[in-house]
Amino acid sequence: MRITGKVVYLSFEGGAYGIIDQHGKKYLPINMPNQLKRDGAEVICRVQPADVESMVMWGEPIYIYSFETLR
Image (cartoon, rainbow, N blue to C red; front, top):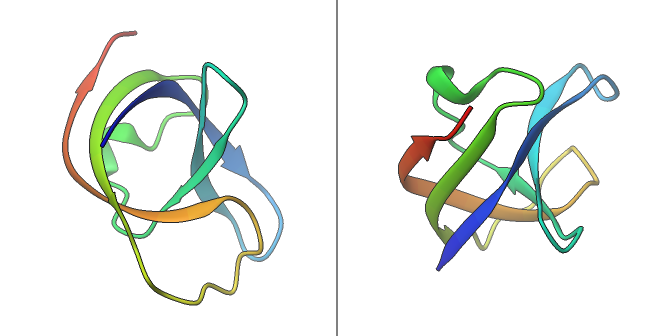
């Protein structure tokens, strides 16, 4: 699956990063690459759903397996 969206910093639950796509859907990367940990970065990511439980109750858990930054 491919998503295009914006990286957001989540300040609750000890801090985490998520991605919100252009339709407003929220994704919670389990393996967020350090290069993408920049609030407001626009990205394209190839992902797959992650069948895991997360302490952060926000978005759909995903694994990122390739990415590209737009800005």
